[in-house]
Structure formats: structure tokens, C-alpha cells
Length: 267
Ligand code: BTN
Image (tube, rainbow, N blue to C red):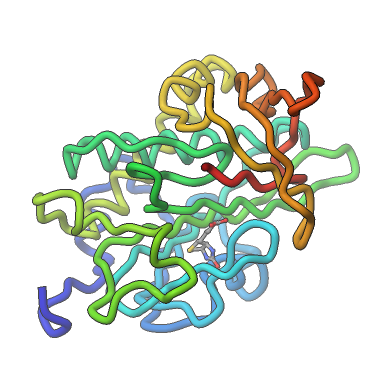
């Protein structure tokens, strides 16, 4: 598809696909620093469900301070405001549920099976297609009462290719599916799926689906405990009932890792 004919975000189209089309505000930007950034600052007081979309981001970011490549028209960059009222220790389930919703939307619309790389990425054959970033605010009781749920998906490979540093690790939906999908429909499908999953009783029940779609369980990985730390070899055993990644180190000791702490390199 040429630059000229690339579909733009359109509020009317998105609303036509949304199942729960309540009075949510939808903000569409041609270019902003970061949809999550805006959700946490200028649009912080928005009601539940408000949606921020951008055709490009100049400072898209992911976990552990990494940048998220967000070129114009080639991706889906969205943030939804959510007001989940759940305890801090359960906030990881927002990422789990968002990952399942993205998985479902890709499966349904693009007809492909992807995999979830704990905790927040969607992969296809070892390459990253999508990243999810939930940034929450907590009240005095430790409940998460407001969160920016950000999702970035590579829709098309950029004409000049992905930047050198992610070229061997990233892929786009246009490279792996023949289906031509409206990105407005794709956005709505992700939101519909997320909201439907959030309404189900008990987040933990969804972990079995999450485990089935994991590309890490049973694999040798490298664990990086903080930015710049030396990677350490481990084997992934499972995802436990609190969504921690259970690994065994080379010396046989096992540890359950929380998502805030580490990044995992798939080998
Ligand atoms: C990651 O790779 O660790 C998560 C990437 C999340 C990227 C999305 S794009 C929309 C939203 N705005 C951001 O700045 N980040 C998220």
C-alpha cells in the first residue's frame, strides 16, 4: 500500500465497530510524543474508556525505558484510559488480559496464530509484532485506580525497513498475513475483546489461555535483571497463578520473576 492510500484513523468508523459505544472520548493525533504520555498528563482526568490514537509517535516508549519505534502510518499506536479498581499485586493481569485481547484480534482479523512473550509482547516466529505498556496510578490502599493501557502494533514494515537495532527482532502484520484489515476495525476489536475479558469473573482463570499461547515456557532464555545488567541463562518452567515467570537458573535453583523486574531474551 502506498503512503498516499494508507488508511487514517477515523472516529466514526471506530465507533461503528465498538460493541460498547458509551460516551467515551476518542482523540486522534497525526503526531504526538506518546499516547501513554498524553494519557498520563493532559488527558489524565478522562473518563474510563477514553481512547487516544496517533498516526505516529516521536517518543513512543515501552518497558524498562526502551523506545518504541512508531513511524507514521505503519503502526497502530493507541492508549486506553482504564479505571480498574484492583489491588496493586493484580495489576499485572491488565497486561495479561490486554495481550490475550490483542492475540484474539490478530487471530480473528488476520487469520494467524501469534505467541505471547511474557509479559507484554506479541511475537510471530521469534519476532516482535506488538508491545503493551500499562502505566498505573495507585491510591493509599495500594489499589490501582487509573491506568494508561498502551498498545503498539507493527502493521506494515516501513518502506526503508526497520531500524538496524531491531531489524532482526521485529516484524509486521503485512509481512505475515495476506488479509487487508481496516486499522479502525482492528482498534475496535482489541477494545471489544479487552472489555469483554475484563467483565469475566476472575482474571486468574484466563492464565491457562495465556500459558497456552506462551512462547517462553520450556525455552532457554537470558534474564536481564536491570538495564545494562549482564544476561544470565535460565530455563522457563511456567507462569504461576500470580502471573510471575518461574525459571530455573543453570545451578538448578528456581525463582519466580515479577514483570517489573526483568526483561527476557528469547534465544
Ligand atoms: C514494550 O515494548 O515494552 C511496550 C511498547 C508499548 C508501545 C505503545 S505504542 C502506544 C503507547 N504509547 C507509548 O509510548 N507506548 C505505548
